[in-house]
Image (cartoon, rainbow, N blue to C red):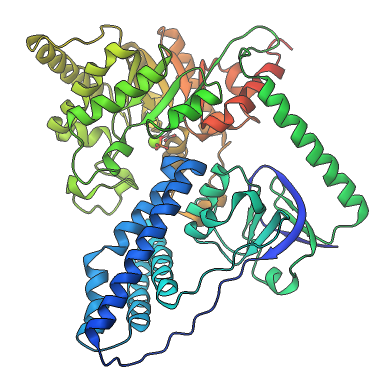
Length: 544
Ligand code: PEP
Ligand code: MG
């Protein structure tokens, strides 16, 4: 029995046989071609096949992992069409007479090197994407594919690293778990694995691949991050029991559908879902979410090549409100900036974009963009129970300015005889330390608070959420974070304002009791976590 330790990124266990993930190695040679035109056509044909494959992968990811996670493949499609990338390849073929494989491989090297040398973590991560799309075109040129899993058994897939497209291309019905030598918990692959509900361990170290072989029995423990090769009979029995318990737990969670989110002492809490698009609403309803606690509206902007029109936005918001049939729907105004960039905003390059023109700061700087979104939101408000939430708030004056703009928008709608609901709740995200600290002054201004712990952690602990190197300094349970939440809850309640949490911490069941003791009224989590959190809530006794 041999044990390897990595980082578990999805809490589940697997017991089964190992399959080493194999990529067919293609040797790229530089060859001069006689017919440049024919070679350019070969490249174009391979590019089109690669695009068709990506379209298929995108649809698969959309189905299995949701829109936010599928987006990476849209980005890949855009990258394949990128003018500079294409020019580099076609120049090498058309002007210099090289073969297409060599031209693609050279463009891949130079573009991925360029991305790797950039300071920005997000741009560095694009290097892997360039290699991924280039390998796809090369495999179309050479007609070589990654070997498919050709067994009836479900397997524990072990790899050095998996590209997002490789992760999603694997037949989910044949994968028991993913284990990789490298990878970071914020990588797209990790996020995809999590949203596909597959146990996964990353960062096991490169030696393990030389020491294991296909068909060996293994345990992948996503809770502890352990990969156990050839477990002894005692370990097998232990994990068989854990698997049985897990399956029973799944059935138990299913049985919680339709039940209340109530503690043993009778305290109720709302458990809502976070979504990134209209399509995610079905998942929220399937998992019995009581409402939508965060609709990240910026995805409407990110999916678009230009500003989404008022009409496009209105349709999306109306559709979510209608599907939720009167349940609360909190739509956050667009949180563009930092890691969520849309070119057509033409924002200046910033040295510290997370501390820059982001979210509400863009809205208040360019009110015409903000007003279009607010008009769409107010128009949609008659179709359900809407709350509008504003991100990245740091001061009272921002709220005053926002409210003034909302007033103008409503006046304009009145003048145009366009209906809107008077019951729309206005709320803010508590995601900067400033907002938490002056929450006594912010609370009287709004109907609700929602704590964005992802950013609150980043800004309080000075840990860039995109930077995997500071993972270990980023203690999500840091006392400073918990105190800021507690202060906000006290100030909210003293002013008759309700308070929820929509950051990832809302799904952390080791904190549920503490959060409920603070008086948190609502927890908004990914749809797949709704029942888990309900289960936890129902076991808590706040009077004990
Ligand atoms: C947060 O910051 O916790 C949050 C919910 O917003 P986002 O993750 O979209 O920044
Ligand atoms: Mg945030």
